[in-house]
Length: 91
Image (cartoon, rainbow, N blue to C red):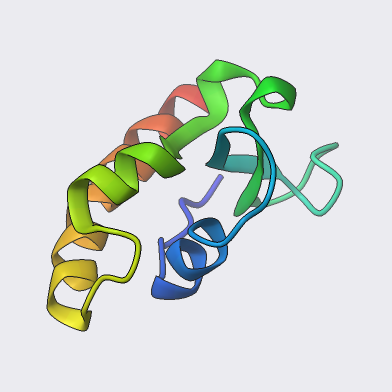
């Protein structure tokens, strides 16, 4: 399985996400029923902990709720390491 690349759009989708404790997570295909891994946003209560990449509150703690481009790019570099680790564990 190929590892997805985390993008600004993923963080920009997570930050305004409604719901209690939204997370970025890896899912297998559009319905999480098989297929290439994808990054998506959902409420943590409905996502198995082994698929979670980061909680919104952790992103806000790290770069704020309105990060500039430099902060976001640096954070994405660090977060990609987590994506790679989670993807490897799910393989």
